[in-house]
Amino acid sequence: MSAKTVLNDASVAFLEKYLNNASPTGYESEGQKIWMEYLKPYVDTFITDTYGTAVGVINPDAPYKVVIEGHSDEISWYVNYISDNGLIYVIRNGGSDHMIAPSKRVHIHTKNGIVKGVFGWPAIHTRMRGKEEAVKIETLFIDLGCSNKEEVEKLGVHVGCVITYPDEFMILNENKFVCRAIDNRIGGFMIAEVARLLKENGKTLPFGLYITNSVQEEVGLRGAEMITKTIRPNVAIVTDVCHDSTTPMIDKKIEGDTQIGKGPVITYAPAVQNKLRELIVDTAEQNEIPFQRLASSRVTGTDTDAFAYSNGGVASALISLPLRYMHTTVEMVHKEDVENVIKLIYETILKIEEGETFSYFK
Image 1 (cartoon, helix red, strand yellow):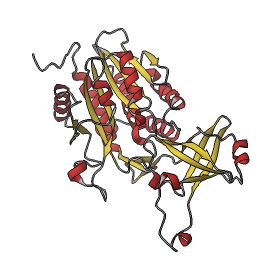
Image 2 (cartoon, one colour):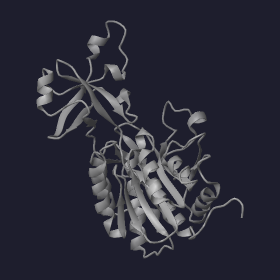
Image 3 (cartoon, helix red, strand yellow):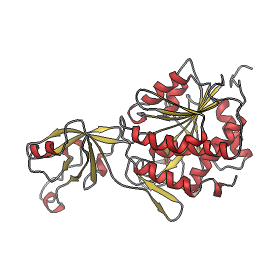
Image 4 (spheres, helix red, strand yellow):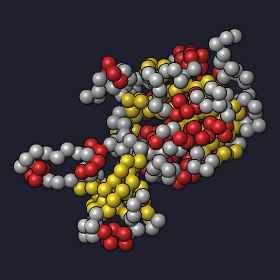
């Protein structure tokens, strides 16, 4: 299975459709439906829960359970206040970056459909006469082209409506995928591709495989926290994104040294079970899959933490995809890294033995 042939045209078409669809935290269900439709030929059944996490299951009756996981939600904004002159002020839904907002187009999601607007910003000419006002949450506002609050409300916009950016998928220089929400719908994409490869290559697993696309990661790993109690897995391999630290204004002494194009990133952290991590490292080396290493401190900041510390402890590990410009609308990853994360998860699954405890004491 060459790294150059893991993805096919149908894969990339699915990725584009999946990324272009908005799935803000708390409103992931439409994206989950797209994901489940793609995954359907490759799994035996699905599990869904109250808040929208979706799980494709292979061998649902097997007692030993392995999870491969990504999260499905993207950062967004909430309508927080509508002024008398029809301007909208916002609060975050997840870690939305206020610095990139001015002059961005937005979609406000209402019961009547999408209402378009823009994050307005004072012209440079008007900001040079005194101290410049910094970009802060309090100074951000959205303009819908309305002259008063009543006009805004007639469009179906009210406090609590969720707001996303419309920026869509593109490929730069033949091998860089660029879009908003690559963090972390690319994770859901990669685990779906693992399921596809297992099916197409006729692999039979000795355990149950739970391809898990969790909701609400961006507000505290909440979807993973819920679904791990439902699945009660023995093993969890999580995939998320991490920073390419080679771009300007990032300190490698703080963020580590990881770069797009140099392979999956294997994390070292208290939540990462050492024997499972070493199985992943060995798998990468044996299959000549390039990889990088990253150390986290108290937490990984990913769904790995939710799985690891659930149900009395679940052997968990994190395989990350290096990404540029996280939580912007131009998040960027390397196609070969995407393929190599898929390969690494796929090959690792094939090495896990039914009943393996990963105990340090045997």
